[in-house]
Image 1 (cartoon, rainbow, N blue to C red):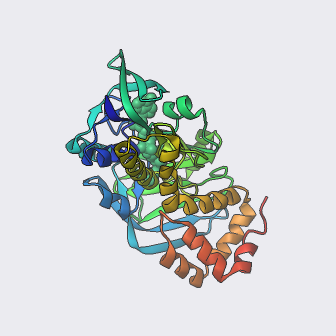
Image 2 (image 1 turned 120 degrees about the vertical axis):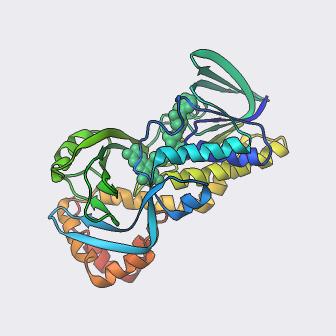
Image 3 (image 1 turned 90 degrees about the horizontal axis):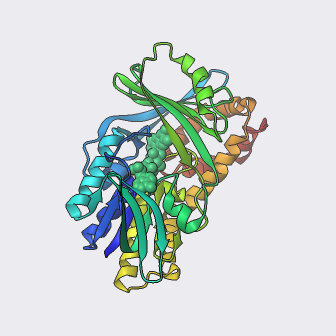
Length: 379
Ligand SMILES: Cc1cc2nc3c(=O)[nH]c(=O)nc-3n(C[C@H](O)[C@H](O)[C@H](O)COP(=O)(O)OP(=O)(O)OC[C@H]3O[C@@H](n4cnc5c(N)ncnc54)[C@H](O)[C@@H]3O)c2cc1C
């Protein structure tokens, strides 16, 4: 019997497998696809924190700024000293998985988990490997199987509460400014989220997210802004932007997208997924050593990830829901607020893609009335 079966070899699953294997536990990591890292459904924008967690050659570009475009065509440019990395997500996932394998993880590709049953003294995981039905027992299971998690369905019976559907293309168009991500807000480009163009040399990732569905329709109209756009590939996907109330159960933990542990404002989930994966590994280490895999013991996992990310995700969630209510007139008045040099200075100094609430709270604390008046035209 394995100590832990980790379902899914995305960044959250591979990173928790890596930490547990390094501690000497017997870990199997089951991945439904024939290749780790494929298909890619990601823009690949991460902070240096993420790159520092992994031995990886995945960075392809780095940016220091963002140009935010408002509905009336005006834009604000912000810039940080710290760089944000644009990485090749396929390569990154393979690098995290390779780290786990070197530490001892038994990775099995082409292995789709179809059911998980929690018994009093073990878990039973049924999966189809290369088309053959198999069953494996373990002392515990980690559900790192993304937004459509089977582990979540079988053990928690829960569904993601708030979803952003995305449509993105890899485009053979070169942005003039290779040092800035372009961000677009307003009712023409997205319902409740935003659109983006992320440079990496002669290739640019152009996409948008929509709360609910219908991203393709918005994309078709947004894409007209890039008349030279030659599409190399289409990739999309959905992002859960509200975490589950409970992410632990007897012998079971949920990490990353499976648990909705994602930054609601940006939809970034690689950093938060890996942080949740490391807390899952830590909680399981103690539970396995004490042979106590009860829900009570594993509640330490949720305390752990919430102590590091809970406040941020909660505030981001509030701000995201607030932004989703804004109409174009509000965004345009927000431009007038954000374009002031002293405000841009605050954003440049406090901006952090992993902790975006810092900049929002700093702006509110310094200029509460001005900040609120920027939103007076909400729908
Ligand atoms: C268009 C788009 C752009 C994004 N851009 C960014 C970005 O720039 N920066 C950022 O930080 N985040 C971004 N994200 C979010 C990010 O991709 C996710 O938050 C991240 O991948 C979560 O990692 P994970 O390991 O939890 O889940 P996933 O990466 O989804 O990994 C889950 C794994 O489980 C496997 N799996 C699923 N079901 C089963 C099963 N039954 N049996 C076995 N294996 C299974 C899947 O094949 C997959 O490999 C973006 C998302 C989208 C859709």
